[in-house]
Image (tube, rainbow, N blue to C red):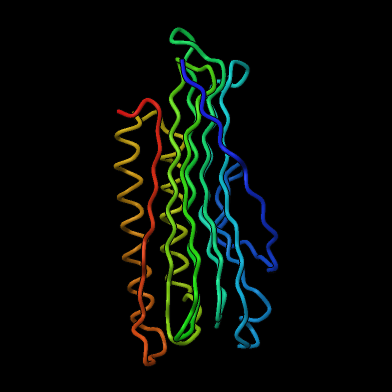
Length: 223
């Protein structure tokens, strides 16, 4: 029996968002958020919070959630971005299994030569009196840095939407946690490759374009 509690965090997003590449009914779509400053080209401060939360308990034995969000900030001088996946299991037993899966993929695009960035990425699997729970939280944060602002092409958006559809199918699957982790890691590698292909076509500048992946996985049981 185990009990782990962690504080929740809150933030305000000052962006306008549009949905593209929607999945079937009941599934989250690939979201792109573009702040007004990204349109005007004015350097600004960027703030974003993306979170996926799932809860399984004696009344709802399975809860599997996923998200993939693209944040396009344009030219910035400072940025604070947080990505969080939280999977909670409550009150199940070894004879009454529960499964809670939360996967969050956040893609942050920002331009500038001297950007001060505070990037936080967390995956938390929490069991509360739940010997029969399987919880998995996976957080992937992709930071795309370029010297000049650029927009993702239709082809790139289509490739990301295809990965998102496969992520949704994986999240709802019955794979063991270890197999699910490996498969989602493989999709994350595909996202990295797609973004690197995209930045290769970005406007050139004194700073070399770069794609950085932050990855944090947490699970119960651990194996």
